[in-house]
Length: 68
Image 1 (tube, one colour):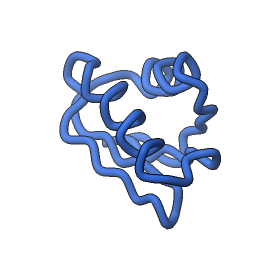
Image 2 (spheres, one colour):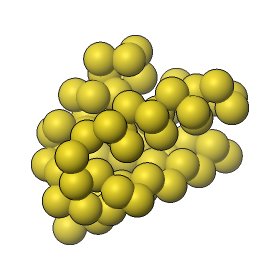
Image 3 (cartoon, helix red, strand yellow):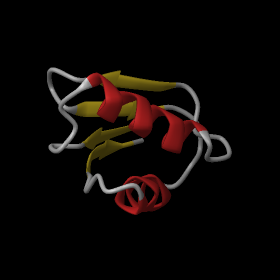
């Protein structure tokens, strides 16, 4: 599981875009978005760097908070 900080995510449309981008990655499920904290929890075995890259490609800079 990986916890990401996505500070620019601030609305329902942002949330949907982030969920879609991460869900499209292989082995990146489940995806849970906390819009209030602007954090995303991603299960599965996808490398944290790949998650950050996928979000950057859709205009959402992200950083890894924790990765297990």
